[in-house]
Length: 286
Ligand code: PAF
Image (cartoon, rainbow, N blue to C red; front, side, top):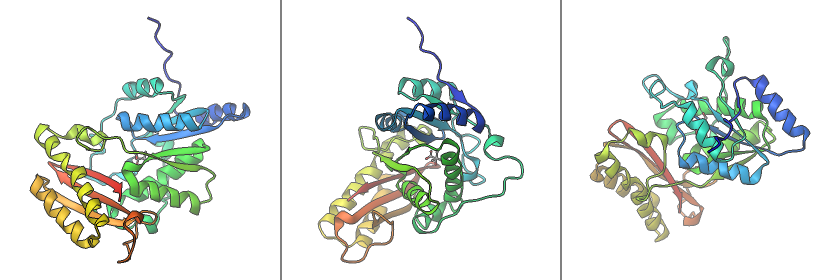
């Protein structure tokens, strides 16, 4: 059987810009999906969404060092470019952008993009460096690719709102599109870090989604958010999680704490819990 041609790859901003400029000359619309590799069905669904909304799709694979703190899994983060490139190609991606670290952060690099607003609290309480790293690299990636649309997963809901804010605040000319979370049969959100779970931990992991659903049911039935959140934290520990970073009902548009009389359907429930050194996050609309 004939093998498909390998996916084109750009390693430098110059190569990337030359490819994108040629497409632009033809009047084509560019979609972009940023990733850190270790691709799974969740990422591929974002690529498909980009392909539906644009003529050409660029996906980046770059394990961004600035969003990992010392002691996090930067060194051990799974890397397999050949596998990722094969999956991207089968999914309708047209160009892989895989820069080296020095291409992204040249010696002397001294700029950081920081946000308040949606970047405050939740993930930031546990990982204070995280959104500085994400906002900096995503600003650079959007400026390097200059796409018409860029697709981010709703699984990282706080990240999605951070990027939406960043794009408005920095007048970046790109539409940010949220892609729905893909899940395993028991509701566990697909994530590259699920690969770190052993069989027992994997069994427990499904409880995160179930318990966040219960919070949503309780809020819809009129329960006050702090009580529903506390019950969920207790339930996660009983289910076998080692620790709970947060379970929070927040305004879905701003991530602010909701007013007492906020209608349930304006809320989003977000949770983060740890098991065996693996940190899982999930969220859903109420
Ligand atoms: O969501 C991710 O995989 C990363 O945070 C992103 C957006 C690719 C930036 O490194």
